[in-house]
Image 1 (cartoon, rainbow, N blue to C red):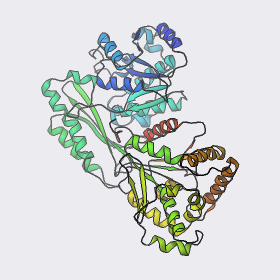
Image 2 (cartoon, rainbow, N blue to C red):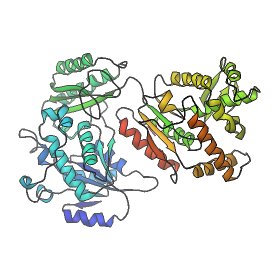
Image 3 (cartoon, helix red, strand yellow):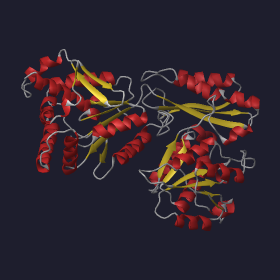
Image 4 (cartoon, rainbow, N blue to C red):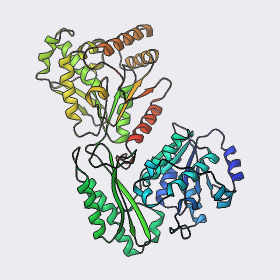
Length: 518
């Protein structure tokens, strides 16, 4: 690992990196396992490419108030270098104040984030702090020009402010939030924990325990949050901590919330001896839902299944449900276009989705395993006709919504974000050109042992199905107003999943929904 002390050293190292992606982890030093987890995450492969990882250590005077701990903040560069290298850093940039601010603080152009993001939480109690943070990070980003900036979700307000700064200034960097690491008793890792005596360290654990007690008690949508805030305040004061604040806010706007409306941040700050502790939890009335819509052949099933597994969510293949009903219609000898004849088949329908031991999804209809049969060309040819019937959509939408009452799933289909789960945390419209979808369909048919028509014929079939799906009277295929369009031409499955993961984390933090352990 290279140790860089001057800006000229940094410039030379950056030139040596070539075209590799560059990921940057800024710190004030006094590294601990939380920092090391950021560094290790920064070094993960990005669709087969190993990025270069740069860590900075700089105790920034601009973000400390007059009576804060700038003078005694831990400085241990040699130890920090060892820990950064052990975690996978390729270089450590550790400039002096004079190197980073050569004209002095008085001649430095400052960054001032929106007042709305600073008015509450830590901003109210540390005036000027986030101006100093934004200024130093903007300076570092200008010098380093990384592809990704990785920050811990522990300092949530800081993360939101820096994401907003990058967006407002049009900086070509992705600001990535990473999960909070904790001690066994729940205390969030922090360099300032080193200030605590053994007795104070035990006392400090009251902060995460008070917050987790609220998070562990399910609250229905619309619940008034004042009792929860009072509960946390009472527990912290009983533990002898000196409270700065307990607040419930919208995670993105940081504006106060009086009721549980979607994902809500419950945050607190308190003084324990010489240390100021901050922590938070996220409150949810149900687990998150991801809605993935798109036309036939866009690769939704393959991607959604893998994406759900990565996030520890249930995979709900609604397309398989409509295919299963189409199979039943064909087996019953009923005309697919006759809604009156199809409706009686739904009255005693027993449609089950299950997961096999190998992780694949199985589909059964009235006790018959139809997993492979529903992928036949015959079913494919008529599924749009059957799915257009109001009675079919009503019956299956009811079943899908019942499956999603507790959340915790990824559903894919044609009308998930518009009709089935309109309040999903993330909505994606996954699509591809007709030519690309025809190519994928040909490969799928070949792998399943079916005859493969000419690509031109497949393109015509797909175009016709698009027309049927988008013009039907009931829940037509359309992109939800708040959905993100993702065009998958030329993208590997891993690349699509990576993009979906980034979109999900923009809406649902790691601290709200952790990924399952590998």
